[in-house]
Length: 144
Image 1 (cartoon, one colour):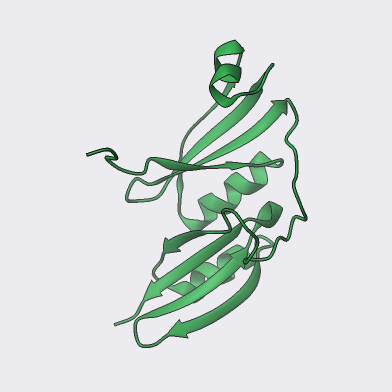
Image 2 (image 1 turned 90 degrees about the horizontal axis):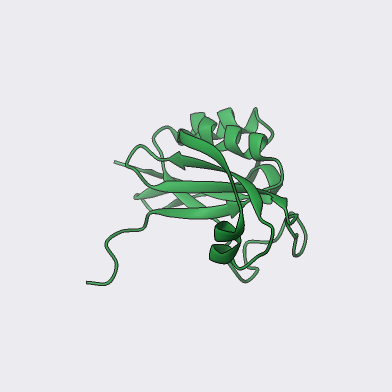
């Protein structure tokens, strides 16, 4: 066996506090936050003179979202903040939820916008949401 599990997904952000609050409102728990720096960190990520603050969030079932705010070198933005869903690369993170309407209303109160919603047969209700820094989150509520 080569892979045991997926541990986390990294999202590089500029406004760590806003993105962290967004994911906490969705129901993730802050596992910890720290600042890392030095030559070993730079060697690991292929950059020099690295200093960054990372926050690890976990879903109730233990899956991780790692948020990384680079202080040095500064993060580089490629393309617009509101990149369309069909742009190449990682486009969204999907979560299973209960009470889709309630979750959508709660995160809209924090400035998130609905990209779209649909019902997939009698199986799921789905919503795509754009949160802080253009992060797209998919929400899926199983029906029945």
